[in-house]
Image 1 (tube, one colour):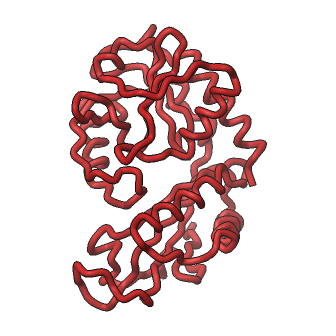
Image 2 (cartoon, one colour):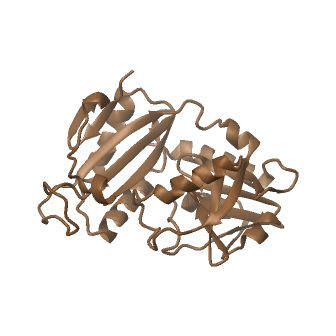
Length: 286
């Protein structure tokens, strides 16, 4: 079945969707994106994604393509026409096209490009991977310095995923100056003596929407949280670990660089946080 996608104000069959070859998202990775999960036909954490999108656009001095209300309408329309019960909505905004390639930004009146499409993911909430837990490896973090801006510069994270695959693992955690920054597409956490430990927010990591929600829910559940740097050796010695992201929610980690965590199965805190997050997110979905 052909999906209906959204491109610059039009709902189109995916086979008819086009943008200019001079679009700066294509030529310069001059673009930002968001991914919003859909559960039960409703949007999870839409407000958080909309706020972060605006922040990313502002940080890059990029124009907003539409209002937040219009963006919500587009999301809901795509969910409806594509009959998405569980899945994802990908949104990308680029600086647009001035009709040629140039390192200099196009004129201020150049319209940004906005594209949205859905991905149907039955069983997204009841993930077999979450029941088993993920294995990760560590790799050097050589990305640019503004990881807090959610740009489409994803070549190295993609390479990291492939390094993990080649090593028989599921993902990679990146290391900078001896400390874990984050996963290739998620925020990273360890648990020691019942305490949740995760890197504090800065330009070094993405300000995860799911991260924010999970830490709030953990605090409400009276779990102990410490935001600080941690090493990969400390992670391998942890009692348990997990990651958070919009598409995988809370994902337990059971092995790091070949070192088994705990008894090699998802830890109790990670499992509980996943349960709480899904429960509360479904209640708040729009």
